[in-house]
Image (tube, rainbow over all chains, first blue to last red; front, side, top):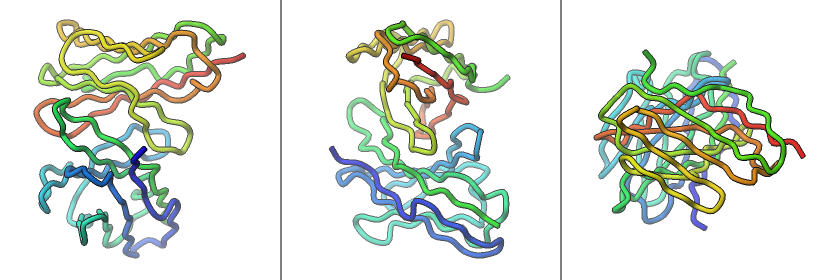
Length: 115
Length: 110
């Protein structure tokens, strides 16, 4: 069964450093998303991406964040200068927006720890 | 008022019980409703997806949506210890953005 994959599973970085989180969406999907989940809190939307453009972004997704689809298979989230409060699980999701609408399939997540 | 409300639990039931999980919401524009299962430190796994009001059944799982009451439910029949996880409701309206509940932690004991 096709699935979304994410690397690395765990990333430890120092405050102020740049990190890139990587995702490989399901191969025939065209809509991509990033969500995050701070420990003990709800899953929160960050950004949606389609046709090489951001479709929608949340208030969390400020100038420190960027997304890119560098090739036909990868989808990345970059945080330019990490803060302690960026520590969270980051989930990539993808969707084919088929006739059933908005089913989104999530990857296993990258746990980001900022020290 | 929170956009999506979900009782965090924990909900503890014996194996074989029928489990009822619920969410309420305030935004009448929501029309797509999902239930995800999340094991500890793992990604959300899509269980059920419904559009607008009505029921949908898949094996031991039944999802119900009552848009007039802004209330959705997930029923699990013949619950198993392997069903022990956190269950997240999620919904969206005219955009792709999913709004999640806080999740209900379910424990099924043998």
